[in-house]
Image (cartoon, rainbow, N blue to C red; front, side, top):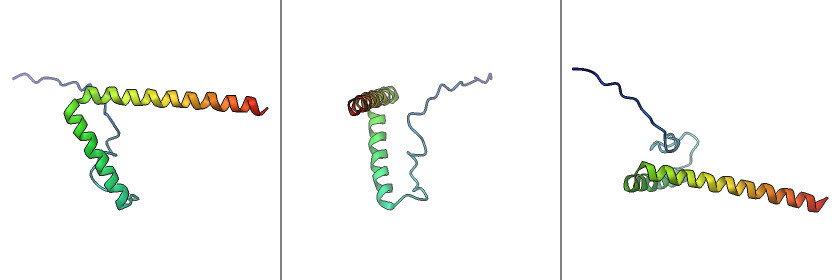
Length: 84
């Protein structure tokens, strides 16, 4: 039988260490429970909508963050020009 070479075109959705179920060394129990709830919601959406939708949402959030950073830079530059 011929063995097939499997090529992985894999892009992790999020940092896998954050999705880990174990509690981190310096993590309080309260933070651990909050992270577990966030992980549960993430996996619930992942199972319901699939990887492509989750990746699209991730890119959308990154785009919004970049727009917010640009907006803050413009506001900072405007406030500096008014102050001088």
